[in-house]
Image: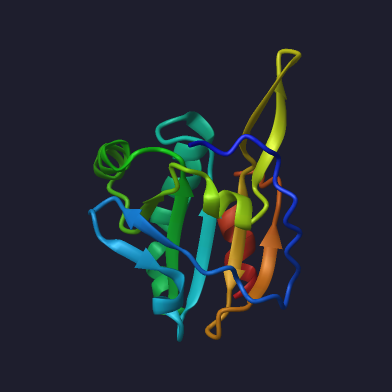
Length: 159
């Protein structure tokens, strides 16, 4: 079953981040609630190995050491299957986990499953979004309709 309706969730800064459990690229289960005590960058992106998504992942990779030094865990989420995540992660040497939301339930919870238009045709897809979650599991910052250039630098400035 695939999510077909546009997200109606409107999360706000200060809200408790919706908990979830998803499968990571290494086959393990990752639950948001298990990561309390550290900051989390939860970023949603449309598709592995596409130009914008690759640049975004590589930007997080290039600044990974700085983020880890600030006690930040990076999690990327898309609807891609685990095998595709594994190839993407290996190809670009990504040092953080990529999670599979094949049913789109977490995308719905975070309000990133949106109506989009391409060449005059409507479709549903993931709106590139990033959520900074604090050590207690609350939303500290929300970036919607993320533009990839300078995004990771903006996050670093905030931290």
